Length: 108
Length: 116
Image (spheres, rainbow over the protein chains, first blue to last red):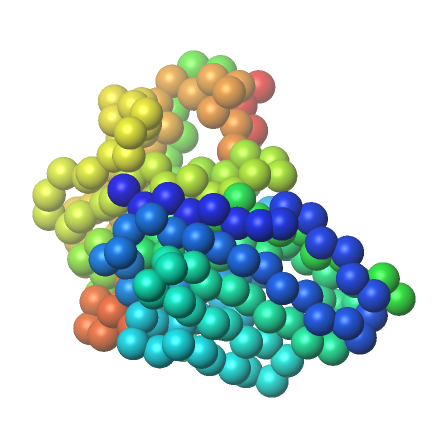
C-alpha cells in the first residue's frame, strides 16, 4: 500500500515568514495529493489539493508543488498569520494514506 | 456542496458493549466509503474500505470481526465496534468520493468513542 512520510513534525515561524512542509510517498500510481488542516476532534479541512497532471497549484497564500519523479510534494504558506497555527496533514492516493502531521505555530 | 453526515458525534459506552456508527452521503451516491481511526495527537489511519453491495476490505492489522462494516445502500455505510474495550476509544471518521465525478472526497464530522 501507500506510505506517506511528512516532515517536519513541528514548525515554528515568525508571523509574516513562510512555512514549508514536505511529504514523500511510495506508490507511483497515486495521483491525488491533498493537504488538510485539522482542529482537535474535528474533521480534516481541505486547504489545497493537486493531481498528478499538474506540477504546481496556488491559492492566495497557499501553494502546493508536486514532483512525480522524486515522489514528493510540498505545502508552502507565505506571509503566515497567527490563524495559520494548526496541525497540517498531507495525504496521497485514492484511499488517502496520511502523513504523520505537522504542528505549525506562528509567533506574533 | 456535497455533505457526508456521521452519527453519533460522541458516544460513551461500557466495556463489552457494541457501538454502531453511521456514515451517510446526503446528496450524492457513494459506492465506496472509507473508515479511519485517529488516536490523540496522531494521524488518521485507514481501517477499511467499504464497498456497496460487497464485503469491506480491511487494512493490515485491523480485526474484521471486531470492526464490522456494512454498506447496504449507495448512501449509507455503518461501522460497528463489537465488544468495545477501553483501547478502542478513539476518534472514528468516514469519508466518501462523489461517485459521479470522483473529483472530491468528503469527510464525515467524526465520532469520538469513549469506552469505560
